[in-house]
Amino acid sequence: MTTSATAASTTAPAVSRSYRPVPTTARRNSLTMLRRNLQHARRYPAMTISLVGMPISMLLLFNYVFGGTMSAGMGSSGSGDYINYLVPGILLMAVGSGVLPTTVGVCTDMTEGIVARFRTMPINGASVLTGRAVGAVIQTLLSIVLVLGVALLVGFRSGAEPIEWLAVAGLLTLMCFALTWVAVALGQLVKAPESASSIALPFSFLLPFLSSVFVPLDSMPDWLRHFAEWQPYTAFTETLRGLLNGSEIGKFGPLAVGWGIALVLIGYLWARSLFKRDATR
Image 1: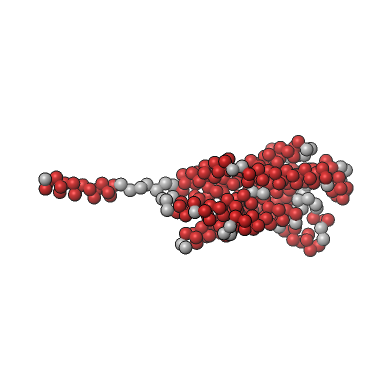
Image 2: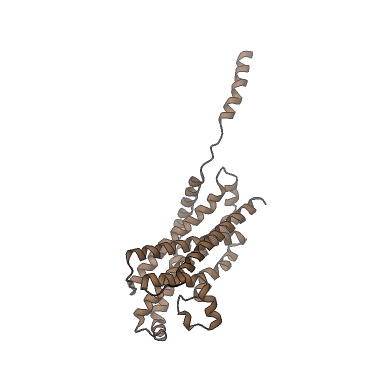
């Protein structure tokens, strides 16, 4: 009996040492969080519908209600010219409309305790943010395709070459990541979904109206033109307009790429910093 007890006592520590939970990789964690966010978007489609509803409503409103007046003011021959001018900015508004649901979604996760539960699991902390960001980018890119489809139905035409369309896709993807990471940071900054809606409003609605999305820069007063000329929406809009319509891009191409990279880095580092700060509380 003593011999068997001694053998059991000597083998037990070996078993406990050999049993260790294997931590999953950051990539696997991020894919898990991505699936979670995509499934959540499928079950609760209201926010996803808003991604498409706002830019499409703006497209139809400005084309059919204000299109004739805008074309006359710009010296164009008809509303068909204005739709070609309008669509690049509307595509960018589709990107901006993704800021609101992302900000609200992150805020909801942070305040309802699901992120606190994730922190207790053997998962990579950054994957929670990465899964949310990549899921939001995928949703936004799908909404851009739908908005572009509607634009083609209402008369938009482009003479862009395939390489130019590829550049358009790259720019829109860059802007998606830029604004999405800013939205992830904003969602952690506020403490209630209602506040998240308010803080996201300038990125999704205000800045497009203070840019060249709807009217040329030359038609603006000097004080507004100086601001609009250097803000990211104008840089991306004019670059997309040049690629799709053949207009001059000039300084706006490098400015758009610079804004995109800067916003990605700022948003990502800011989001990571806020996530780590909350973990220490």
